[in-house]
Image (cartoon, rainbow, N blue to C red; front, side, top):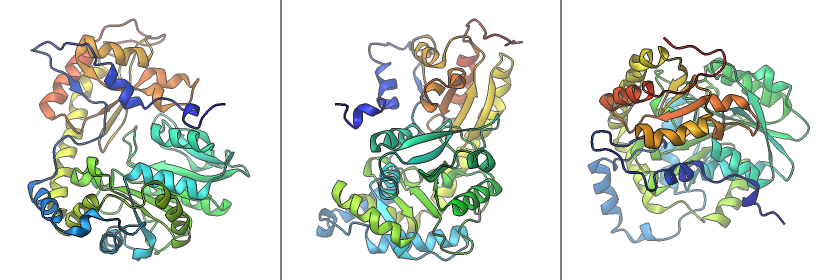
Length: 397
């Protein structure tokens, strides 16, 4: 009998890390790791000091409310309303042990065996993995050359088993920022069919647009809409596992059952850090965003080097650049070869696509949050040096 975990693939980032085993990198060509979208620097010193102080509070070491500490839920509700322009109450907020758990909890609350969730491709692989393990069918929604999904194309995929549409914006892996009109069209489609629209906004703090990226919350609570968020990227709290769900209280009552049986509550130290960050780190986060935007600009500035070799930039934003390579070699093999040949660790497009979708074989994802502008220039020089037979119809200067 096949177990739930056997229904899906191995964690791609962990698999990619194994490609490093036994590889020695030349002194003049150190590894450039652009495989994972997680900050490697610790939280800012004032936040670390607040976390250290919290360790002296006995409550930090105890179970808390399953849906999260009340002060954090209230603070996030205020911040959410300020950002999106519509009323948000604390009872619409659940705090989770990371944003992946937020997605898992929502799917568990919405779906049963054999139900369906529509995911645009390229998709975030952990979303696909959880759907597999839940016995929920991931229905692939193809996107065009701009990687923006189309609500009318999604309409044709809705069946009586469809429970939700899950979008990620800014997108992982594609980097693209979905236009407000695109999100509104999907919300209308979901409402028309009695579905939930799940919008994972893990990377919202690094959106290049000023102000709210959409108006889905402008009129206040919307029972169709489920928003997911992560404090990990904004405050560098990846190891402390703290995320959030913003949804109607009826859905959160079901989410509570899932959370209580999986982790009981999100880690207390992470919740206290997130609360302190919401109260004190707005300017610091703005500075982090500015730095990410500088690195994004560096990607754009260096793309001509690759375009001359036949590469194409498909999507760019938040932590990611998503590229089409010109080679005959499949991207899963190319990504492995780049480790030894160019001291570059990246992820192939094949892991973001359904099995049998040939387009992933020509794509790679670069997570650039942990490489500075000089390293980005070096990364592009190394990629431009890759020499392989070109795919049919491809040319380079």
